[in-house]
Length: 77
Image (cartoon, rainbow, N blue to C red; front, side):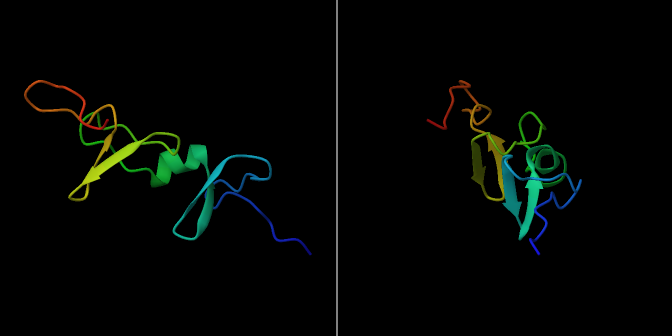
């Protein structure tokens, strides 16, 4: 018998869909954003699975939110 391949949180089937594996569990992108994604310290929005993330000293930013505090020039290039 085939193993079920469902989202750990919402139980929707993941066959043929994008998904993320987090802590040994598979989850759909919607549930990843809701339950697993890190929160950007600048804009306070979740950093989605399709977004680029910058982290430093256990703090997280979207790559576009990681900027110089004085001139606001992006630093993640």
